Amino acid sequence: MKRKTLLIVLLLLVAGSVVLCSRRCGHEVPVLNVDSLFVDLNQAIVDKRAKQADKVFTDMSRNGFNGVVLYAEQGVVVYEKAFGWRDLTKRQKDALRVDDAFQLSSDSKMFTAEAVMLLKADGKLDYDDDIRRYIPELPYEGVTIRMLLTHRSGLPRYDSMADEFWPDRKKPFSNDALIKMLVDKKPEVYNAPDVVYFYNNINYALLATVVERVSGQRFEDFMRERVFEPVGMGSSYIYSMRDVEEIPLYVPTEVQGHDLYRKGPVKTQNDYLNGVMGDKVMYSTVEDIWRYNQALDVHLLLPDSLQREAFVPGSPNWKNGENYGFGWRQSQEYPDVYFHFGWWKGYRSGIIRDERRHRFLVILGNTTYIIPPDVTFAFMTDTSVMLPEAEPLKQ
Image 1 (cartoon, rainbow, N blue to C red):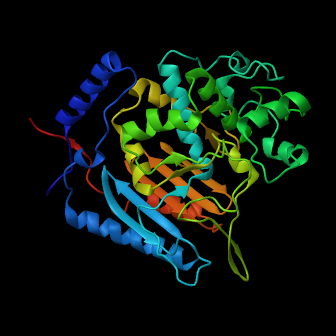
Image 2 (image 1 turned 180 degrees about the horizontal axis):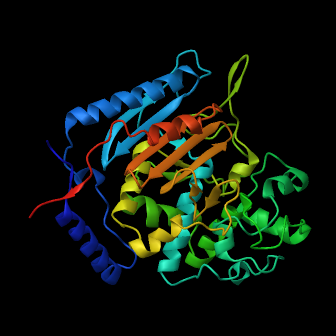
Image 3 (image 1 turned 120 degrees about the vertical axis):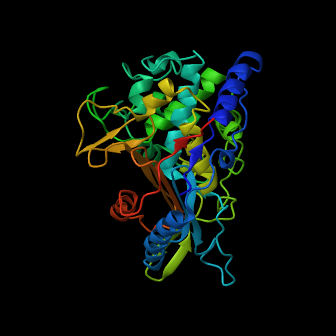
């Protein structure tokens, strides 16, 4: 029986080149070719698991899912398929493709967290720094970067604040406008810092500003240069309306988001809150996200000792059996499984990284159809068919 084998020699070359580049080339790192890391597994087992996947996700598409799925196990892509259409409102519909880019919604947060972790590795910030060290105008005391990462800041919701105080909805609401509004209006906090886990988009919006002020780069540029390009995520980007005076009616992308109504799908219009980065508005493909998962496996961006911090529970108490690391959710029901689900303005997404069974799933949808967590977790934890574990290449 063929076994999947990890190419240790290649990994050593990658690791060595990272070290050399870190010494000689500033922050440049080699581009990762994830397809070259592994050789084939027993094809019969792969085909059987792929058949299981096809049943699950074809059934999901019959129930309303419109989007793209990629499933991998033991470092091999087992299943990848597109279901439905780019724009559901057109009479002549263009079929979705597996290389189409979707908005990741809240799944963007794991990438924002990675940017902060890179700056920590650079020695430019510490997780327990007060955020006013980098955003001194903020009127709230005692909030640290770690509290933003783990949603323990207690800060107010920015979307509610913008709904009340941002009168011109044709003009983008930006990260800078958010901070200015906090300064001018000083809305009441939800609770004192570091008291309780409370998921809140403002935390990651502020982290994007921290990245900009610490790095001296625009957030979208930092993400491209330090995350997307090194990993080979050539179709990924941060949507920016930084220089836009009036919001375009729709986001300029081939794959439009849709709201679903009884009368049929309606293309979701652009929104003034799409001007805020860090908590959302990252666009990517299933294959790019798969490349990022592989980069985590081989510690391309960060050494394992630093990368593991993303998966450490951020709160001492588990709220309803759930916790939050640095951009990754956790559940006591599924040990060693890290995940995130997202929804925003006509898009839904889900990313699940199962380190216990070495499985990975990414689902990107362009409608408000709710990706069912019970179905996806049942598929991910089904052990009736399992690919053989990776073995070191014998020298």
